Length: 356
Ligand code: AMP
Ligand code: MG
Image (cartoon, rainbow, N blue to C red; front, side, top):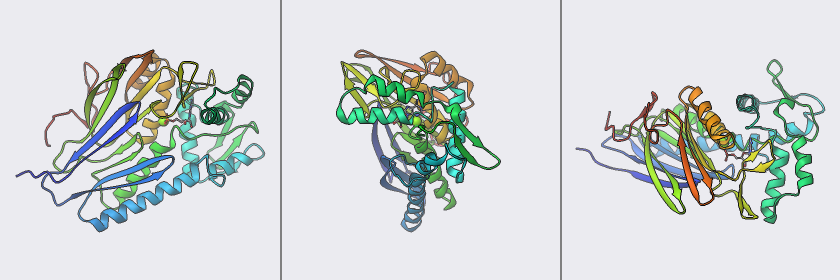
């Protein structure tokens, strides 16, 4: 007899609406759910554990790990490792802890891969757009072009032997907003695994790190909704396990001015917020890759973004672009639900595949 003991669904608006649900059949494991605001979003943990004590200990250690990472990566906390290192790194190379070194290394990898569409040195421009958002007015052209001069990932020097960071200009500000949450979601899930918890999902806002399937299910259901035109939406459900998915978009973070909607994602070439990328969803083997690529593919022209996704192993993407009040969708070759010819990766299961 199959007994449904748990069903949870969340709606995340991030340009796309993502909903996921899990179902537990008869099993000694129970579904537990926790949430905590961190890194400017809500971290949610869904996990299957034998009892409440293990579930609560594991999730509290996972949240501690997220808090630790926020203290390292934050560009809002003056005493974060990132801000402290940035302050001094143009004078002399600064030794970094393993998390900061690793995420900067990955950031430079995605910058090179995207020819600078993803750029971890975008900080000075992001700062102006944040201020503009508070004033509800576009940033002034002059400070924007000055800030743009400080952007350039090639001015970041990492030395793998000494694990140090050097910045070639003293006006540079590093910003990990496009990559840190995916990394943190994976790290939180790694803590759960230490407790023997493998059927789990950690969501850092729109960045999901997904483990083994819920007991008796073939995967975690993730529903992706996209606009088709005006306020109309259509949705598709993916069943995912052992992978990560991230959605970047301008649903919440945007500035409306002169009849345009400017996203919080900046094109480093123009220093302007994007206006046509409504949302971009990426599925990838790990959270850092999914997060970084969702931002990157928002910026790249559609055809370049899709070819980039196709060129990377176990990566696929679904893009929604805005043209006035109309929306156009694109999916990369391997995107499971939306592509006409779905080629599913190992670790993914087709929707309605039934129980394993
Ligand atoms: P996400 O929501 O993951 O797409 O990340 C958006 C955040 O990344 C923004 O709020 C900025 O902090 C930062 N960001 C904006 N534009 C870029 C860019 N071109 N490259 C890297 N980070 C960016
Ligand atoms: Mg991102």
